[in-house]
Image (cartoon, rainbow, N blue to C red):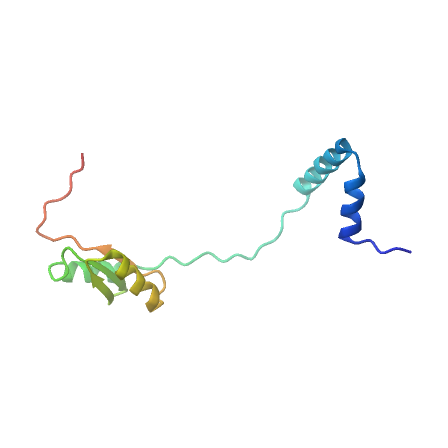
Length: 114
């Protein structure tokens, strides 16, 4: 008695005429669509609480105006005018989804857009 393997099945499918291969593909797709969905135990990604970072930005806006800052809560990870360097420092720190933002001057007029 021969053992059924994926390789032997694929070899047999390869020997079918093209219209039968198409029919097999169609039947297999229908069967998969009707099959019960796979159960997945996916946990949602927790959304970080940026309230401490927002408070830090409010308190330190004048000191870091015009600079990029990376914050983990109220902890300053990095700052500077080069956004890429600040992002790299934040990544190297390993903080979970740090807030990286350009600090606007609190004295600047609000942006009205065009």
